[in-house]
Image 1: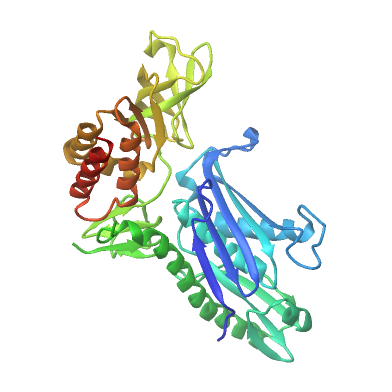
Image 2 (image 1 turned 90 degrees about the horizontal axis):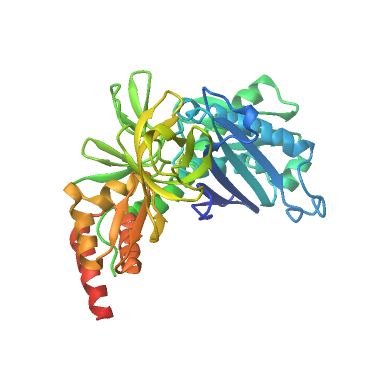
Length: 226
Length: 202
């Protein structure tokens, strides 16, 4: 299975509690995490757990179509919502009652598969923030072009293809935290797509681990040369 | 000494254990935050400060009411200082050293024994690095004070108050300790660093 070039860097924003930059194909997405912190607005406070606020937006310069438009639209509100569901089931929210955790995903350049890339980056940002989570989560989009199922389509391939199935999974438990689909697939194709998703997720997780080790391994081992 | 980085989702034990920064699922223990695994200890490398009974923390008076004050303690949670626990009057913005007297099940903290900290500077470090800055029986802190002549108060919440002496050198040394927190021979290296820097000034 071929994925596009993928590179993740953890801790790129010093003022955020956690952050990560993902470069996946031509996608460039910045994720930042603030929290746990006091809930705003106050009346939404939940005395039993932390609230997760996820915000996915595309910058006006992120692609030829977004040009000039700013702020959330229906699509980014939808993606924000499904991302929120991912992290509500991933973060150990009961350890931080009466707080909220803000997860921001800003797409600086988009080229297909941005929701999966954004959430993959956000997962690294959460770990970078030291917020307790059940696992690193990640995923990939599976499409179908001329009858053949392919992983990780860019925008052109996605527009030309017949189906798009993004998913976010937890490899440790085998759980699926985000699962959406466009287009038409047979049952066999769905099953095949699912196993491709888990296969792709393994490769993506390696990059997440690489990013976090690169940042945190410096505090280990022998002294850095001065 | 075998040290390695452990990431969330990594299994750390085959049985349910109560370890810092870990959780139990189906009878096994897993890491929940990025940590260092050293022999059988798991040391989280990041995380916000949560108030604990008995901790001394450096806080900032945030709000004033008839009954007392709210104290911001570099945590998602605040401390409450009751007027019954202090004879002094504080103003919003005052920096105080307080002790955490009680923490309820939603992490609200009651703080007592306020001591106003005047002049000086505050730096913020990760609360997980505080034990390293203090050192075993205060050994690292002693070395810092010896070479800088600075009055240093390290709050468990990661806020460090510095006053007098060479605060710049003390700050640099503390940041260096945080960066190299889990390397071996740190105490000797910090001592050497402080000696070299002190020589440069003189």
